[in-house]
Amino acid sequence: MKKTLFSIVALLYSCLVLAQSQYPTLFEASQGKETPVYADVIQYFRTLANDFEEVKLVEMGTTDSGMPLHVVLYDREQVFDPKKWHEANRLVIFINNGIHPGEPDGIDASMMFLRDVLLGKQQVPQDLALAIIPVYNIGGHLNRGSFSRVNQNGPEEYGFRGNARNFDLNRDFIKADTKNARSFQLIFNWLAPHIFIDTHVSNGADYQHVMTLISTQHNRLGGQTGEYLEKELNPKLYEGMKTKDFPMVPYVNAWGGKPEDGWPQFKDNGRYSSGYAALFNTLSFMPETHMLKPYDQRVMSTYALLQTFMEIALHDHAKIVNMVKEDRGQRKSQSHFDLNHTLNREYVKMIEFRGYESGQKPSEISGLPRLYYDRSRPFTKEVKFYDTYEAGLSIEKPKAYIIPQGWFTVIENLQRNGVRLETLRSDTLLPVTIYHMADFQTAQRPFEGHYLHSQIKIEKSQALLPFRAGDFLVTMNQEKNRYIMEVLEPEGEDSFFAWNFFDTILQAKEGYSAYVFEDLAADFLRTHPEIKAALEAAKKEDAALANSGPAQLRWVYERSPWKEKEHNRYPVFRIEN
Image (cartoon, rainbow, N blue to C red):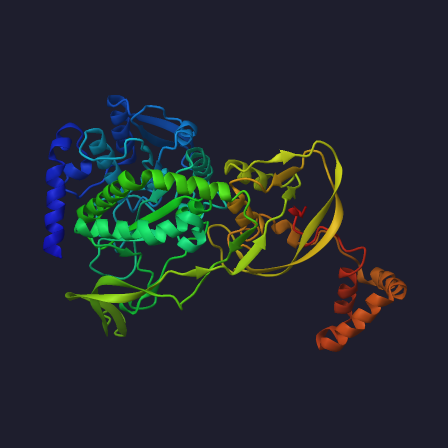
């Protein structure tokens, strides 16, 4: 395989010689060893925009680094307006690079690929509208060095995974703690792409493949696009890469085990780029080149994957546009939405995997057994791949949600993501379903600035509640319904509740002095014999409660009219009909 890869890389280089003479990249000039600094990346695309009328470089939002986020637009018709692209049923492809700037393969591949399209060296659909973010994590790209990715084979210098505030941006697409993510949400929903590609480099096991691929989980995507992704698009991508001598496998999600034993598909929740994009019915992908392969091979395999996408788009572009459009329209009337998908290992596919024999040998550090891969013993075999997920939760959508205006961080997130919000014109009473937080687990260590909630359980009640003029109504008759349900239903794995947006409701703000409340509680139980009976029954079931006066007093308080209604009451309400 090494000879084959050497040959294909050499051939691709030779095909780029003419282009280099006009618009050379540092990657090419350095024989595949270097990647440019941030200012040079932007200048390269600015040069293309200045020299070709089909290209426009725009600034859209800012980042935590204080620098603006750039988007490169390619449009043969020079329209540069996504609304008009969609009105004309044109295919929109969106490429995001440098989310982890230590993984710059896509930056160099995109520079060369767009240049070659402009010079007629690469064929793309006539009606293609292409958008490229040259470098998404600008702060991380500016934090440049050669040691932060200890396992990676080149380039000579590269950026850092964390952004200017040390966030991993590929965990920020729902919570949007960073200016980067907030700008991205606006850009993504402005473009509304049919296909989204977010370029990466993998970590993990060693194997022969240069390119692996995370396709968004097809069961979570659902609809026509989910079926097309599984049955047509993915097979075409794998076949196309094989013909280019870059045989590809799904991302090797074999942590803690041997790849030859098989692995499950990576489930890309909404916190990740491809999972976020899928919430809007976009066919989304994270290409993951292999960290241990030479940098030139990694970049050229990314280039080859972009070629393969375009080859498929040349044939399927109208089909893709129609399917995505119909699936998005169907979200308006869909009655139930599936959340919290779990792997079903009863369904398995066999895929060809080209690996290296692994084994154990004594560590020179500890003397204890350590894992190693023997590159002198390559193998090709069929392995198990599990890519079927089933809903862990199905929730019927309400007619609308109502959100009090004080929860502005939630409202701003919805607005950035294109959710249509209406405001109440006057104070009003509305019959609503109320969620009460019955139970949940909270992580003991921080994750990306949060202590995530999980295993969330709710209790429901109905009531007639007052709302104020200016409170927000989210009607559930819009294309964004899937995203709305994912973030507003608190039981969702990546809901706003899970990400701590509502943690202030989990702490009681009022209390009682026990010596005073003892007498009030006794009077309350005398006038509410059903509560008294429930307490006695609870004491029989719970010895700790029966043997604790303070616990019994708290039990009564929690069921009394003095208990504050806001405590543990989820402040997003459902209007059912």
